[in-house]
Image (cartoon, rainbow, N blue to C red; front, side, top):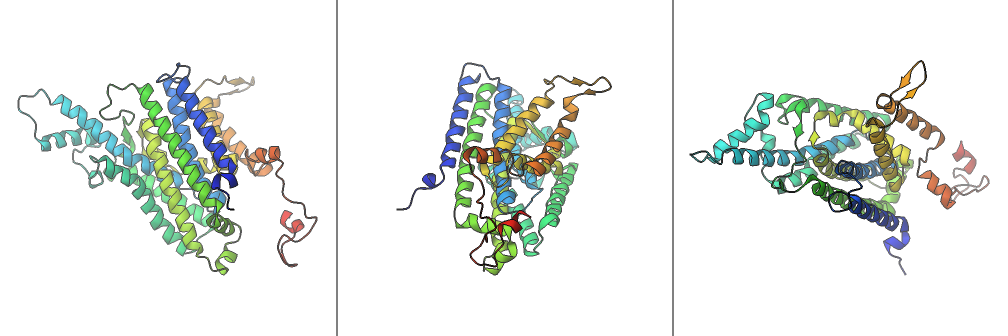
Length: 410
């Protein structure tokens, strides 16, 4: 009798239950619907953290399971934010323009309204005309579709070109980083159509929700972020649990052997790359309305490096490890950079944690890589008594010529 997915993978059900309990607890303690213990700003921080956890599990699939160290997935994250930000900014500006013109003696024409909206949005870069990329900005369904399509198509084109050329290892990482840098540099230009280095702002103001307090809106986004993380975790856990997961792990461990067995290595890698790019785009679309602003600096290559650090610290090759790493680093980073941590006076020098936090993060990454390659999630293995089998030098494969335990340790 075939057991259900949750019976075979109880950790998935545990994660979903913990996520639901966390969301309920924050709701009860919030200012919007609860007793007011947790401030609205911290609810937004927790909602953004859930979005970062979502992009982290996408990174874990592409790196921890498929072995592709992508240093460009935060570019897909940012693109998702830009796509939803265009609709939010357009509709919010339209509401302001329509309200300001409501009392004029001669009602404005649709073209005059459009010109006024364009002047409000693009006046900061010396223009008043809508670029072609804003063609679908007035339509929420269209922009939601672009949240998925734009990161997905970029990943499809880039991945097809890279994987068909069989670029692997550090060279592929450099290419993904170059893609991210090129995209960020393009968006910094005023003629990119996305307001250059000014970016898109005021995204926390939902159109038509002026009478709804931010304390309640922050909870809406928290619920949406938790739902997206739960569904994303469930999807990726299902992907890595079957034959597909075995193949991509095989590609990670020995790509040449998997190709020799007749599998389309490039096809598998391309699917994983595109799927994780789409998930990253969805995470970005939920993140930036909570942040309130997005600019090209959010797409800088260093952001993708941080993403890899989160996954490594949490535990690569374990979805829950990526969640732990992203949540831990995000919340600790918020604490250190908020100025609430008292400085350390050494006499000859005072350590200000706002300035030194990134150094601490870098050292943590180095120490985890050297001394705890399984990351924080490895502690769960110790607690559960999960240790690699000791074969006392026996072959690790079915034949006498297979790799032996002693060789594997070396």
